[in-house]
Length: 416
Length: 96
Ligand SMILES: Cc1cc2nc3c(=O)[nH]c(=O)nc-3n(C[C@H](O)[C@H](O)[C@H](O)COP(=O)(O)OP(=O)(O)OC[C@H]3O[C@@H](n4cnc5c(N)ncnc54)[C@H](O)[C@@H]3O)c2cc1C
Ligand SMILES: [Zn+2]
Image (tube, rainbow over the protein chains, first blue to last red):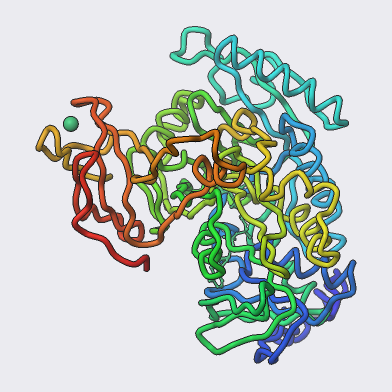
Protein backbone atom coordinates (compact mmCIF):
# COMPACT_ATOMS: atom_id res chain seq x y z
CA UNK A 1 0.00 0.00 0.00
CA UNK A 2 1.38 3.38 -0.96
CA UNK A 3 1.09 5.85 1.87
CA UNK A 4 -0.98 9.00 1.36
CA UNK A 5 0.86 12.20 2.27
CA UNK A 6 1.33 15.77 1.17
CA UNK A 7 4.33 14.57 -0.78
CA UNK A 8 2.40 11.84 -2.62
CA UNK A 9 -0.25 14.41 -3.50
CA UNK A 10 2.38 16.65 -5.05
CA UNK A 11 4.05 13.77 -6.84
CA UNK A 12 0.77 12.55 -8.33
CA UNK A 13 -0.17 16.06 -9.35
CA UNK A 14 2.78 15.95 -11.74
CA UNK A 15 1.13 13.07 -13.63
CA UNK A 16 -2.32 14.67 -13.49
CA UNK A 17 -3.51 12.25 -10.77
CA UNK A 18 -3.74 9.47 -13.30
CA UNK A 19 -1.33 7.07 -11.61
CA UNK A 20 -2.75 6.64 -8.13
CA UNK A 21 -2.61 3.05 -6.95
CA UNK A 22 -6.01 1.28 -6.79
CA UNK A 23 -7.36 1.67 -3.28
CA UNK A 24 -7.96 -2.09 -2.99
CA UNK A 25 -7.64 -5.20 -5.15
CA UNK A 26 -10.57 -7.10 -6.66
CA UNK A 27 -9.44 -10.66 -6.01
CA UNK A 28 -11.14 -13.89 -7.07
CA UNK A 29 -12.21 -15.77 -3.97
CA UNK A 30 -9.99 -18.56 -2.64
CA UNK A 31 -11.48 -21.98 -1.85
CA UNK A 32 -11.05 -21.63 1.88
CA UNK A 33 -10.52 -18.89 4.45
CA UNK A 34 -9.83 -18.85 8.17
CA UNK A 35 -12.57 -16.27 8.58
CA UNK A 36 -15.34 -15.22 6.22
CA UNK A 37 -17.02 -11.96 7.16
CA UNK A 38 -20.49 -11.59 5.69
CA UNK A 39 -21.32 -7.94 5.05
CA UNK A 40 -18.93 -5.25 3.84
CA UNK A 41 -20.34 -2.31 5.76
CA UNK A 42 -18.21 -0.25 8.14
CA UNK A 43 -18.54 -2.81 10.93
CA UNK A 44 -17.58 -5.80 8.77
CA UNK A 45 -14.60 -3.98 7.27
CA UNK A 46 -13.43 -2.76 10.69
CA UNK A 47 -13.69 -6.34 11.96
CA UNK A 48 -11.53 -7.56 9.08
CA UNK A 49 -8.99 -4.80 9.66
CA UNK A 50 -8.56 -5.51 13.38
CA UNK A 51 -8.49 -9.29 12.85
CA UNK A 52 -5.57 -8.80 10.48
CA UNK A 53 -3.85 -5.96 12.31
CA UNK A 54 -4.16 -7.04 15.94
CA UNK A 55 -4.74 -10.78 15.78
CA UNK A 56 -2.54 -11.60 12.79
CA UNK A 57 -5.33 -13.48 11.01
CA UNK A 58 -4.99 -12.43 7.39
CA UNK A 59 -6.59 -15.30 5.48
CA UNK A 60 -9.91 -13.47 5.54
CA UNK A 61 -12.61 -12.65 3.01
CA UNK A 62 -15.24 -9.96 3.39
CA UNK A 63 -18.22 -10.92 1.24
CA UNK A 64 -20.54 -8.11 0.24
CA UNK A 65 -23.65 -8.52 -1.88
CA UNK A 66 -23.59 -4.95 -3.17
CA UNK A 67 -20.66 -2.60 -2.93
CA UNK A 68 -18.50 -1.83 0.10
CA UNK A 69 -20.17 0.53 2.55
CA UNK A 70 -23.35 0.75 0.45
CA UNK A 71 -25.72 -0.31 3.24
CA UNK A 72 -26.54 1.71 6.32
CA UNK A 73 -22.96 2.92 6.42
CA UNK A 74 -23.71 5.02 3.33
CA UNK A 75 -27.16 6.06 4.49
CA UNK A 76 -26.64 7.34 8.00
CA UNK A 77 -26.46 10.85 9.40
CA UNK A 78 -23.01 10.18 10.95
CA UNK A 79 -23.63 11.38 14.48
CA UNK A 80 -20.92 10.22 16.86
CA UNK A 81 -21.15 10.41 20.65
CA UNK A 82 -20.67 8.11 23.63
CA UNK A 83 -22.99 9.56 26.26
CA UNK A 84 -25.10 6.44 26.80
CA UNK A 85 -26.59 5.76 30.21
CA UNK A 86 -25.44 2.32 31.34
CA UNK A 87 -21.86 1.30 32.11
CA UNK A 88 -21.77 -1.48 29.51
CA UNK A 89 -23.02 0.65 26.64
CA UNK A 90 -21.16 3.84 27.46
CA UNK A 91 -17.86 1.95 27.77
CA UNK A 92 -18.34 0.28 24.40
CA UNK A 93 -19.29 3.55 22.68
CA UNK A 94 -16.48 5.42 24.39
CA UNK A 95 -13.91 2.85 23.27
CA UNK A 96 -15.22 3.61 19.82
CA UNK A 97 -14.98 7.37 20.31
CA UNK A 98 -11.37 6.99 21.46
CA UNK A 99 -10.60 4.98 18.33
CA UNK A 100 -12.27 7.66 16.18
CA UNK A 101 -9.94 10.22 17.73
CA UNK A 102 -6.91 8.50 16.19
CA UNK A 103 -8.54 6.85 13.20
CA UNK A 104 -7.36 9.07 10.34
CA UNK A 105 -3.75 8.55 11.52
CA UNK A 106 -4.24 4.85 12.16
CA UNK A 107 -5.66 4.24 8.68
CA UNK A 108 -3.63 6.90 6.84
CA UNK A 109 -6.99 7.92 5.44
CA UNK A 110 -8.89 11.09 6.23
CA UNK A 111 -12.19 10.01 7.79
CA UNK A 112 -13.04 13.70 8.38
CA UNK A 113 -13.81 13.11 12.04
CA UNK A 114 -14.99 16.43 13.36
CA UNK A 115 -15.48 16.86 17.11
CA UNK A 116 -18.03 19.63 16.82
CA UNK A 117 -19.95 18.52 19.90
CA UNK A 118 -23.42 17.06 20.33
CA UNK A 119 -26.38 18.67 22.09
CA UNK A 120 -29.27 16.50 23.31
CA UNK A 121 -32.13 18.86 24.10
CA UNK A 122 -34.59 18.62 26.99
CA UNK A 123 -38.09 20.07 26.64
CA UNK A 124 -39.77 19.24 29.94
CA UNK A 125 -38.85 18.55 33.54
CA UNK A 126 -38.62 14.80 33.07
CA UNK A 127 -36.31 15.26 30.08
CA UNK A 128 -34.08 17.42 32.25
CA UNK A 129 -34.04 14.89 35.10
CA UNK A 130 -33.09 12.17 32.62
CA UNK A 131 -30.40 14.36 31.10
CA UNK A 132 -28.91 15.14 34.51
CA UNK A 133 -28.91 11.50 35.45
CA UNK A 134 -27.27 10.51 32.18
CA UNK A 135 -24.60 13.22 32.34
CA UNK A 136 -23.77 12.23 35.92
CA UNK A 137 -23.53 8.58 34.92
CA UNK A 138 -21.28 9.56 32.00
CA UNK A 139 -18.95 11.54 34.23
CA UNK A 140 -18.65 8.62 36.64
CA UNK A 141 -17.57 6.59 33.63
CA UNK A 142 -14.96 9.17 32.64
CA UNK A 143 -16.96 10.42 29.67
CA UNK A 144 -17.15 14.14 29.04
CA UNK A 145 -20.50 15.82 29.44
CA UNK A 146 -22.20 18.86 30.84
CA UNK A 147 -25.75 19.95 31.48
CA UNK A 148 -26.14 23.31 29.75
CA UNK A 149 -28.71 26.11 30.00
CA UNK A 150 -30.81 27.51 27.16
CA UNK A 151 -28.55 30.57 27.05
CA UNK A 152 -25.48 28.40 26.59
CA UNK A 153 -27.31 26.39 23.90
CA UNK A 154 -28.00 29.64 22.08
CA UNK A 155 -24.29 30.49 22.20
CA UNK A 156 -23.40 27.10 20.75
CA UNK A 157 -26.11 27.13 18.07
CA UNK A 158 -27.21 30.75 17.52
CA UNK A 159 -30.03 29.96 15.08
CA UNK A 160 -31.92 27.85 17.60
CA UNK A 161 -35.17 29.11 19.07
CA UNK A 162 -35.01 29.15 22.88
CA UNK A 163 -38.10 31.29 23.36
CA UNK A 164 -40.12 30.10 26.34
CA UNK A 165 -43.41 30.45 24.49
CA UNK A 166 -42.58 27.99 21.75
CA UNK A 167 -44.68 24.83 21.56
CA UNK A 168 -41.91 22.67 23.07
CA UNK A 169 -39.67 25.13 24.93
CA UNK A 170 -36.03 24.19 25.35
CA UNK A 171 -35.18 23.87 29.03
CA UNK A 172 -31.61 22.70 28.67
CA UNK A 173 -29.46 20.03 27.10
CA UNK A 174 -26.64 17.61 27.58
CA UNK A 175 -23.49 18.69 25.79
CA UNK A 176 -20.75 16.28 24.80
CA UNK A 177 -17.92 18.31 23.24
CA UNK A 178 -16.00 15.21 22.10
CA UNK A 179 -18.94 14.06 19.99
CA UNK A 180 -19.41 15.09 16.39
CA UNK A 181 -19.58 13.65 12.90
CA UNK A 182 -17.37 11.86 10.37
CA UNK A 183 -17.47 11.13 6.66
CA UNK A 184 -19.52 7.92 6.32
CA UNK A 185 -17.95 6.58 3.10
CA UNK A 186 -14.43 7.42 4.17
CA UNK A 187 -14.69 5.18 7.21
CA UNK A 188 -15.67 2.18 5.10
CA UNK A 189 -13.08 2.98 2.45
CA UNK A 190 -10.33 3.61 5.01
CA UNK A 191 -10.89 0.29 6.75
CA UNK A 192 -11.25 -1.46 3.39
CA UNK A 193 -7.93 -0.07 2.17
CA UNK A 194 -6.22 -0.95 5.44
CA UNK A 195 -7.62 -4.49 5.47
CA UNK A 196 -6.75 -5.06 1.82
CA UNK A 197 -3.17 -3.97 2.45
CA UNK A 198 -2.93 -6.57 5.21
CA UNK A 199 -4.03 -9.29 2.78
CA UNK A 200 -7.78 -9.41 3.34
CA UNK A 201 -9.80 -10.30 0.21
CA UNK A 202 -12.67 -7.88 -0.35
CA UNK A 203 -15.26 -9.61 -2.51
CA UNK A 204 -18.07 -7.42 -3.79
CA UNK A 205 -21.20 -8.22 -5.78
CA UNK A 206 -21.38 -11.62 -4.09
CA UNK A 207 -24.34 -12.57 -1.95
CA UNK A 208 -24.21 -15.16 0.79
CA UNK A 209 -27.22 -17.42 0.27
CA UNK A 210 -26.55 -20.19 2.76
CA UNK A 211 -24.42 -21.17 5.73
CA UNK A 212 -23.09 -24.70 5.44
CA UNK A 213 -22.72 -26.64 8.66
CA UNK A 214 -21.42 -30.05 9.64
CA UNK A 215 -21.96 -31.61 13.04
CA UNK A 216 -22.98 -28.39 14.77
CA UNK A 217 -20.07 -26.40 13.35
CA UNK A 218 -19.91 -24.02 10.44
CA UNK A 219 -17.77 -25.04 7.44
CA UNK A 220 -18.42 -22.26 4.97
CA UNK A 221 -20.91 -20.16 3.05
CA UNK A 222 -22.89 -20.71 -0.12
CA UNK A 223 -22.87 -17.71 -2.43
CA UNK A 224 -24.33 -16.89 -5.81
CA UNK A 225 -20.78 -17.49 -7.09
CA UNK A 226 -20.34 -20.86 -5.43
CA UNK A 227 -19.26 -22.33 -2.10
CA UNK A 228 -16.51 -20.70 -0.04
CA UNK A 229 -15.10 -22.72 2.83
CA UNK A 230 -14.41 -21.08 6.20
CA UNK A 231 -13.37 -22.16 9.66
CA UNK A 232 -15.28 -19.20 11.10
CA UNK A 233 -18.14 -17.14 9.72
CA UNK A 234 -18.79 -13.70 11.19
CA UNK A 235 -22.06 -12.07 10.13
CA UNK A 236 -22.25 -8.29 10.14
CA UNK A 237 -25.28 -7.71 7.96
CA UNK A 238 -27.29 -5.06 9.86
CA UNK A 239 -30.90 -5.00 8.58
CA UNK A 240 -30.55 -8.37 6.87
CA UNK A 241 -29.24 -10.19 9.94
CA UNK A 242 -32.52 -12.02 10.49
CA UNK A 243 -32.36 -13.34 6.94
CA UNK A 244 -28.76 -14.50 7.36
CA UNK A 245 -29.50 -16.05 10.76
CA UNK A 246 -32.34 -18.03 9.20
CA UNK A 247 -29.78 -19.55 6.79
CA UNK A 248 -28.26 -21.21 9.85
CA UNK A 249 -31.64 -22.11 11.30
CA UNK A 250 -31.43 -19.40 13.97
CA UNK A 251 -33.81 -16.66 15.02
CA UNK A 252 -32.69 -13.34 16.48
CA UNK A 253 -34.39 -10.86 18.82
CA UNK A 254 -34.18 -8.33 16.02
CA UNK A 255 -36.73 -6.59 13.85
CA UNK A 256 -35.81 -4.75 10.67
CA UNK A 257 -37.38 -1.35 10.17
CA UNK A 258 -36.98 1.50 7.70
CA UNK A 259 -35.15 4.58 8.97
CA UNK A 260 -35.12 7.69 6.82
CA UNK A 261 -32.93 10.73 6.42
CA UNK A 262 -32.87 13.74 4.16
CA UNK A 263 -30.53 16.50 3.15
CA UNK A 264 -31.14 20.04 1.99
CA UNK A 265 -29.58 22.03 -0.78
CA UNK A 266 -26.13 23.28 0.30
CA UNK A 267 -26.26 26.52 2.27
CA UNK A 268 -23.57 28.71 3.82
CA UNK A 269 -22.15 27.51 7.16
CA UNK A 270 -24.82 28.12 9.81
CA UNK A 271 -24.68 25.20 12.21
CA UNK A 272 -21.32 23.96 13.47
CA UNK A 273 -22.54 21.40 15.96
CA UNK A 274 -25.00 18.50 16.17
CA UNK A 275 -28.44 19.11 17.68
CA UNK A 276 -30.71 16.24 18.69
CA UNK A 277 -34.05 16.15 20.40
CA UNK A 278 -35.86 13.06 21.62
CA UNK A 279 -39.05 14.84 22.52
CA UNK A 280 -39.81 16.56 19.24
CA UNK A 281 -37.87 13.85 17.42
CA UNK A 282 -35.42 15.40 15.07
CA UNK A 283 -31.70 15.69 14.72
CA UNK A 284 -29.63 17.88 12.51
CA UNK A 285 -26.11 18.84 11.56
CA UNK A 286 -24.51 20.56 8.60
CA UNK A 287 -22.11 18.70 6.37
CA UNK A 288 -18.86 20.21 5.17
CA UNK A 289 -20.50 20.57 1.76
CA UNK A 290 -23.14 22.77 3.35
CA UNK A 291 -26.22 20.56 3.25
CA UNK A 292 -28.31 20.27 6.36
CA UNK A 293 -28.35 16.58 7.26
CA UNK A 294 -31.58 15.62 8.97
CA UNK A 295 -32.51 12.30 10.47
CA UNK A 296 -36.10 11.17 10.77
CA UNK A 297 -37.67 8.63 13.06
CA UNK A 298 -37.81 4.91 12.51
CA UNK A 299 -40.98 3.67 10.81
CA UNK A 300 -43.31 1.69 13.03
CA UNK A 301 -43.52 -1.39 10.82
CA UNK A 302 -41.07 -4.09 9.73
CA UNK A 303 -39.69 -3.53 6.27
CA UNK A 304 -36.79 -4.29 3.96
CA UNK A 305 -37.68 -1.87 1.18
CA UNK A 306 -35.09 0.85 1.99
CA UNK A 307 -37.85 3.44 2.07
CA UNK A 308 -40.41 4.50 4.65
CA UNK A 309 -43.60 6.48 5.04
CA UNK A 310 -43.80 10.14 4.21
CA UNK A 311 -45.54 11.26 7.40
CA UNK A 312 -42.44 10.20 9.39
CA UNK A 313 -40.33 12.65 7.40
CA UNK A 314 -43.04 15.28 7.76
CA UNK A 315 -43.03 15.03 11.58
CA UNK A 316 -39.27 15.39 11.65
CA UNK A 317 -39.36 18.48 9.48
CA UNK A 318 -41.99 19.98 11.76
CA UNK A 319 -39.65 19.40 14.68
CA UNK A 320 -36.68 20.92 12.87
CA UNK A 321 -38.67 24.02 11.90
CA UNK A 322 -39.81 24.34 15.49
CA UNK A 323 -36.19 24.29 16.70
CA UNK A 324 -34.76 26.37 13.85
CA UNK A 325 -37.54 28.59 12.42
CA UNK A 326 -35.20 30.03 9.77
CA UNK A 327 -34.71 26.57 8.25
CA UNK A 328 -38.33 26.57 7.10
CA UNK A 329 -37.07 28.37 3.95
CA UNK A 330 -34.49 25.75 3.08
CA UNK A 331 -35.31 23.37 0.25
CA UNK A 332 -34.77 19.68 0.66
CA UNK A 333 -32.70 17.94 -1.95
CA UNK A 334 -32.76 14.20 -1.36
CA UNK A 335 -34.43 11.71 0.94
CA UNK A 336 -33.72 7.99 1.45
CA UNK A 337 -34.12 5.09 3.82
CA UNK A 338 -31.98 2.36 5.29
CA UNK A 339 -33.03 -0.84 6.99
CA UNK A 340 -32.04 -0.85 10.63
CA UNK A 341 -31.88 -3.90 12.86
CA UNK A 342 -33.63 -2.93 16.08
CA UNK A 343 -33.24 -4.86 19.34
CA UNK A 344 -35.72 -4.90 22.24
CA UNK A 345 -33.27 -3.06 24.54
CA UNK A 346 -31.84 -0.71 21.89
CA UNK A 347 -28.41 -2.32 22.32
CA UNK A 348 -26.39 -4.39 19.87
CA UNK A 349 -25.67 -8.10 19.76
CA UNK A 350 -21.98 -9.03 19.59
CA UNK A 351 -22.00 -12.70 20.17
CA UNK A 352 -21.09 -16.31 19.62
CA UNK A 353 -24.03 -18.52 18.68
CA UNK A 354 -25.13 -22.06 19.41
CA UNK A 355 -23.32 -23.08 16.21
CA UNK A 356 -19.55 -23.47 16.57
CA UNK A 357 -17.61 -20.94 14.52
CA UNK A 358 -20.65 -18.77 13.76
CA UNK A 359 -20.72 -15.24 15.16
CA UNK A 360 -23.13 -12.34 14.89
CA UNK A 361 -22.58 -8.61 15.23
CA UNK A 362 -25.90 -6.86 14.66
CA UNK A 363 -28.78 -5.10 16.34
CA UNK A 364 -27.10 -1.69 16.18
CA UNK A 365 -30.40 -0.33 15.00
CA UNK A 366 -30.57 3.37 14.47
CA UNK A 367 -27.24 4.22 16.06
CA UNK A 368 -24.34 2.00 15.07
CA UNK A 369 -22.30 4.28 12.85
CA UNK A 370 -20.68 5.91 15.86
CA UNK A 371 -19.65 2.45 17.05
CA UNK A 372 -17.97 1.33 13.82
CA UNK A 373 -14.37 1.27 15.13
CA UNK A 374 -15.19 -0.11 18.58
CA UNK A 375 -17.57 -2.70 17.23
CA UNK A 376 -14.98 -3.99 14.79
CA UNK A 377 -12.35 -3.97 17.54
CA UNK A 378 -14.27 -6.04 20.10
CA UNK A 379 -15.85 -8.30 17.49
CA UNK A 380 -12.46 -9.13 15.95
CA UNK A 381 -11.23 -10.08 19.41
CA UNK A 382 -14.34 -12.20 20.03
CA UNK A 383 -13.97 -14.05 16.72
CA UNK A 384 -10.19 -14.51 17.03
CA UNK A 385 -10.34 -15.96 20.53
CA UNK A 386 -13.74 -17.64 20.26
CA UNK A 387 -14.45 -15.85 23.52
CA UNK A 388 -16.19 -12.51 24.11
CA UNK A 389 -14.00 -9.45 24.50
CA UNK A 390 -14.59 -8.02 28.01
CA UNK A 391 -16.51 -5.05 26.57
CA UNK A 392 -18.59 -7.34 24.34
CA UNK A 393 -19.52 -9.91 26.98
CA UNK A 394 -22.61 -8.03 28.15
CA UNK A 395 -23.91 -7.88 24.57
CA UNK A 396 -24.21 -11.63 24.05
CA UNK A 397 -27.35 -13.23 22.66
CA UNK A 398 -27.69 -14.98 25.99
CA UNK A 399 -28.76 -11.75 27.69
CA UNK A 400 -32.24 -12.31 26.30
CA UNK A 401 -32.40 -15.64 28.13
CA UNK A 402 -30.98 -14.39 31.41
CA UNK A 403 -32.93 -11.15 31.30
CA UNK A 404 -29.80 -9.01 31.70
CA UNK A 405 -30.99 -6.50 29.11
CA UNK A 406 -29.24 -3.14 28.84
CA UNK A 407 -32.04 -0.68 28.39
CA UNK A 408 -30.72 2.21 26.34
CA UNK A 409 -34.09 3.40 25.04
CA UNK A 410 -33.54 6.64 26.94
CA UNK A 411 -30.13 7.51 25.59
CA UNK A 412 -30.84 5.98 22.19
CA UNK A 413 -34.37 7.34 22.17
CA UNK A 414 -33.96 9.38 19.08
CA UNK A 415 -32.82 7.50 16.02
CA UNK A 416 -29.25 8.58 15.25
CA UNK B 1 -47.66 6.05 3.42
CA UNK B 2 -49.76 2.92 3.72
CA UNK B 3 -53.48 2.76 3.07
CA UNK B 4 -54.83 0.14 5.43
CA UNK B 5 -58.17 -1.61 5.22
CA UNK B 6 -59.61 -2.07 8.71
CA UNK B 7 -61.64 -5.30 8.69
CA UNK B 8 -63.79 -3.98 11.54
CA UNK B 9 -64.61 -0.58 10.03
CA UNK B 10 -64.60 -2.06 6.51
CA UNK B 11 -62.83 1.02 5.23
CA UNK B 12 -59.47 2.03 3.80
CA UNK B 13 -57.83 4.48 6.17
CA UNK B 14 -54.55 6.36 6.37
CA UNK B 15 -51.62 4.66 8.10
CA UNK B 16 -51.44 7.45 10.66
CA UNK B 17 -54.72 6.24 12.19
CA UNK B 18 -53.07 2.95 13.11
CA UNK B 19 -50.28 1.73 15.30
CA UNK B 20 -48.18 -1.31 14.65
CA UNK B 21 -48.43 -4.37 16.86
CA UNK B 22 -45.62 -6.58 15.56
CA UNK B 23 -45.62 -10.20 14.46
CA UNK B 24 -49.03 -11.89 14.63
CA UNK B 25 -50.03 -15.40 15.67
CA UNK B 26 -47.52 -15.63 18.52
CA UNK B 27 -49.32 -17.78 21.04
CA UNK B 28 -48.95 -16.80 24.67
CA UNK B 29 -47.74 -19.86 26.59
CA UNK B 30 -50.54 -21.26 28.72
CA UNK B 31 -48.18 -22.22 31.52
CA UNK B 32 -45.36 -19.67 31.54
CA UNK B 33 -43.99 -21.09 34.80
CA UNK B 34 -43.43 -24.42 33.06
CA UNK B 35 -41.08 -22.87 30.45
CA UNK B 36 -37.32 -22.69 30.73
CA UNK B 37 -35.60 -19.32 30.25
CA UNK B 38 -34.84 -19.97 26.62
CA UNK B 39 -38.42 -20.81 25.69
CA UNK B 40 -39.66 -17.75 27.56
CA UNK B 41 -37.07 -15.53 25.85
CA UNK B 42 -38.12 -16.99 22.53
CA UNK B 43 -41.72 -16.02 23.23
CA UNK B 44 -40.84 -12.53 24.48
CA UNK B 45 -38.05 -11.36 22.22
CA UNK B 46 -37.21 -13.61 19.27
CA UNK B 47 -38.99 -12.87 16.01
CA UNK B 48 -39.21 -14.29 12.51
CA UNK B 49 -38.57 -10.86 10.98
CA UNK B 50 -39.62 -12.12 7.53
CA UNK B 51 -38.25 -10.61 4.37
CA UNK B 52 -41.31 -11.10 2.16
CA UNK B 53 -44.68 -12.33 3.39
CA UNK B 54 -45.28 -11.23 6.97
CA UNK B 55 -48.31 -11.65 9.22
CA UNK B 56 -48.57 -8.79 11.66
CA UNK B 57 -50.89 -7.04 14.08
CA UNK B 58 -52.22 -3.54 13.60
CA UNK B 59 -54.30 -1.47 16.01
CA UNK B 60 -56.86 1.02 14.68
CA UNK B 61 -55.95 3.52 17.39
CA UNK B 62 -57.75 6.56 15.97
CA UNK B 63 -60.72 4.61 14.66
CA UNK B 64 -62.56 1.66 16.13
CA UNK B 65 -59.69 0.99 18.56
CA UNK B 66 -59.60 -2.67 17.74
CA UNK B 67 -56.76 -4.99 16.78
CA UNK B 68 -56.65 -6.98 13.56
CA UNK B 69 -54.05 -8.77 11.46
CA UNK B 70 -52.53 -8.02 8.09
CA UNK B 71 -50.53 -10.03 5.60
CA UNK B 72 -47.97 -7.68 4.12
CA UNK B 73 -44.97 -8.04 1.86
CA UNK B 74 -42.09 -6.45 3.78
CA UNK B 75 -40.09 -5.88 0.59
CA UNK B 76 -42.74 -4.07 -1.44
CA UNK B 77 -44.85 -3.02 1.60
CA UNK B 78 -47.94 -4.19 -0.29
CA UNK B 79 -50.76 -5.18 2.05
CA UNK B 80 -52.17 -8.40 0.62
CA UNK B 81 -55.05 -8.84 3.06
CA UNK B 82 -56.32 -7.83 6.47
CA UNK B 83 -58.32 -10.15 8.68
CA UNK B 84 -59.85 -10.19 12.11
CA UNK B 85 -57.96 -11.40 15.15
CA UNK B 86 -58.75 -15.04 15.79
CA UNK B 87 -59.05 -15.88 12.12
CA UNK B 88 -56.34 -17.29 9.87
CA UNK B 89 -54.67 -15.64 6.84
CA UNK B 90 -55.62 -16.90 3.40
CA UNK B 91 -52.27 -15.91 1.95
CA UNK B 92 -49.26 -17.74 3.29
CA UNK B 93 -45.96 -17.94 1.52
CA UNK B 94 -42.28 -18.52 1.87
CA UNK B 95 -40.19 -15.50 2.69
CA UNK B 96 -38.35 -13.96 -0.21
C1 LIG C 1 -31.14 7.00 7.92
C2 LIG C 1 -30.16 6.48 8.92
C3 LIG C 1 -29.53 7.35 9.80
C4 LIG C 1 -28.63 6.88 10.74
N1 LIG C 1 -27.97 7.79 11.52
C5 LIG C 1 -27.01 7.37 12.38
C6 LIG C 1 -26.24 8.32 13.13
O1 LIG C 1 -26.41 9.54 13.00
N2 LIG C 1 -25.31 7.86 14.00
C7 LIG C 1 -25.09 6.51 14.17
O2 LIG C 1 -24.25 6.17 15.00
N3 LIG C 1 -25.78 5.59 13.45
C8 LIG C 1 -26.73 5.97 12.56
N4 LIG C 1 -27.43 5.05 11.82
C9 LIG C 1 -27.18 3.62 12.04
C10 LIG C 1 -25.94 3.14 11.29
O3 LIG C 1 -26.04 3.52 9.93
C11 LIG C 1 -25.79 1.64 11.36
O4 LIG C 1 -25.98 1.15 12.67
C12 LIG C 1 -24.39 1.22 10.91
O5 LIG C 1 -24.00 1.92 9.76
C13 LIG C 1 -24.37 -0.26 10.66
O6 LIG C 1 -23.17 -0.61 10.02
P1 LIG C 1 -22.97 -2.05 9.47
O7 LIG C 1 -21.63 -2.10 8.87
O8 LIG C 1 -23.29 -3.03 10.55
O9 LIG C 1 -24.16 -2.20 8.41
P2 LIG C 1 -24.26 -1.88 6.84
O10 LIG C 1 -23.47 -0.71 6.45
O11 LIG C 1 -25.71 -1.90 6.50
O12 LIG C 1 -23.55 -3.14 6.23
C14 LIG C 1 -24.14 -4.42 6.14
C15 LIG C 1 -23.77 -4.97 4.80
O13 LIG C 1 -24.16 -6.33 4.72
C16 LIG C 1 -24.47 -6.60 3.38
N5 LIG C 1 -25.25 -7.84 3.32
C17 LIG C 1 -26.48 -8.07 3.83
N6 LIG C 1 -26.87 -9.32 3.56
C18 LIG C 1 -25.86 -9.91 2.86
C19 LIG C 1 -25.67 -11.21 2.30
N7 LIG C 1 -26.61 -12.16 2.41
N8 LIG C 1 -24.51 -11.46 1.65
C20 LIG C 1 -23.54 -10.51 1.53
N9 LIG C 1 -23.68 -9.26 2.06
C21 LIG C 1 -24.82 -8.97 2.71
C22 LIG C 1 -25.24 -5.36 2.94
O14 LIG C 1 -25.27 -5.22 1.55
C23 LIG C 1 -24.48 -4.25 3.65
O15 LIG C 1 -23.52 -3.62 2.82
C24 LIG C 1 -28.36 5.48 10.85
C25 LIG C 1 -28.99 4.60 9.98
C26 LIG C 1 -29.86 5.08 9.00
C27 LIG C 1 -30.51 4.10 8.06
ZN1 LIG D 1 -61.32 0.15 12.54
